[in-house]
Image (cartoon, rainbow over all chains, first blue to last red; front, side, top):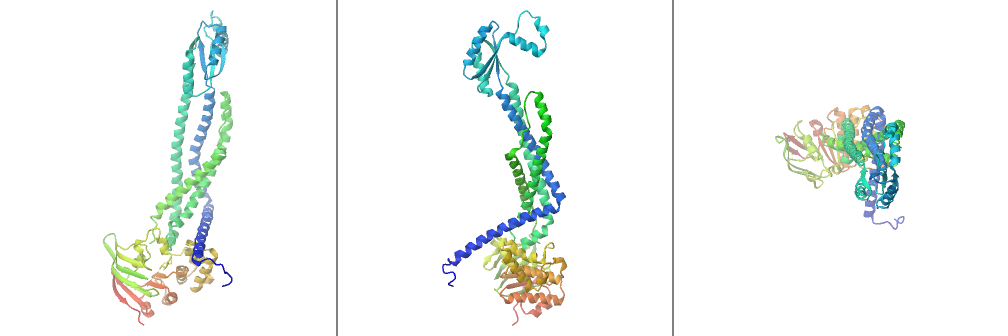
Length: 324
Length: 223
């Protein structure tokens, strides 16, 4: 009695020990089930690998499409930044006047840079690019007007369009050409691609749920007796579900890592031809990499899908498994 | 400990498995439940285990109306009852030790404490030396003793058994019943469904006799 003179009230004390020991028991079961389920997966390596591969393949397609779109978006930004307006001057404007018009244009709000192309320069460029020196050289008069290439300060299509309208009012300007149509077309395509990628992600995500769900359904069927017995002696649904949820999460982890590997390999494999193709267009475009955040997201989503697929399968079958 | 009040159980709306059962079992009593197969013995035990709900009436176990237990409370209720099944319900991929430890594992009992209690229970049924064996390596009588060890490892206040001697010869049956009597002697309420009338008659305990789902005799223990 004298050994513990300051013993706290018994009731509170026992209650505290009990709930903390229950928590420890819960943790212990989690640890045991995580190990047990991984052990079960390893004992049937071929079956596990097939399931994981199925998950990986289902994840690779939408992920790859997403990555490509991400690359296209970078390209799109680059293109928008290089968007320019071509301001054609009136025919009667000579070189000196053209220089003054250019100054006037450069002074306008919203104009970042200007570059004057005189009629003669324009002709030379034209001849060079078309290889029509002879034919054009025979013309008595230069049919081309002088022009000014204007880089807008704000490259968004709306701002560029507004700027074009404003520049048309400058004296000496005949016409303002802006070629936004193809940029917008590209944007529509990118939006379309994004939606297709999203739809595919949803479809293939459901595919992962089904793959894991089916695998777990078989596992539940194989362990039906065990489930019946533990239910008879007081196991909660959470207790019964736990090993299967871990299996699902392991499948998801394996599938996610395989998908990551496939994507990395694939982008390595495609990198050289893509670089060559981009170079032939005079652009520098490289396939975007997953990066740390992307990798974690991919594997995380995969684990989550595996877990969810298992949850759905077990919950659906727990209702069927009733002790006789 | 167990109170049945006008309990009836119908299956599929027509078949009446149990009808108007009224009885009580006192704490610390040992009761046999007997009758032909199909008389409703198993249905009655299933009701007490809360595998099913009564269609009519109510059942109180240790003062709680178990028909009103929420589904999430049922597992915790079952942990307070030890059940011995005719077909043992052992898991064949686990050792005897782990089979007996299963209820403690479900309750998250600390492993060292669990091992102590498992060995005590196995010692009680005389099978401690087989703790590492698989159920398949044991005889029918030994498997049934493992089932009993699993049912009592938790020190339940109520022990139920459904035909625990169903497939055993008379000597083994008597041994098994002796074990139940031992647990009853230390205060456990025991209810055993059995149609082994000769054995039951010799044991001198209260007998509830069922016929076609009705209680036709309640024979107090001869003292």
